[in-house]
Figure (cartoon, rainbow, N blue to C red):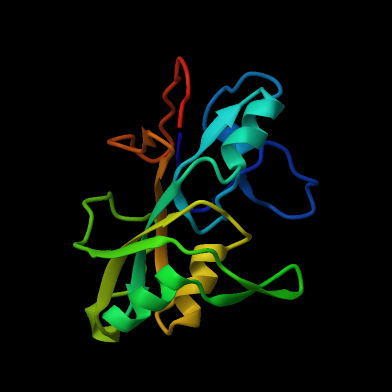
Length: 181
């Protein structure tokens, strides 16, 4: 599915807070779960399953995850190099050095406007990068780009393994017959 901005990657909640849940977008089969998560402010490809073993496999480092990130400012070649080599971020209260990954500058992708406006050019320029990871720590991409001085303004997961977001529109769901890396 293409998870839209503003939704959390859950189907039920403890009702203490009003949140938009994926279950409100589509009539999913009982027992459906998200494979990995995208935070409330992130968008893009989210695989869903009723198979816990499949979820564990896809979340492993055997599958690349590709993200497009819109950054505050024009990212430098030095910042790209640092991201590729690994940067120190906080994870579960400890310091963590991210694994090597692939990063490249890209032109602005043609995604629909986000439901909540990011900001306009009066606040300075932005740039886009593609980041390909084989891991996925809590808010990792956001932490990585902030560490090198270019905070993430918009984050869209575009690929998991060979499965591409393609032209799915926000909130749209497409069933897959099978999945392979």
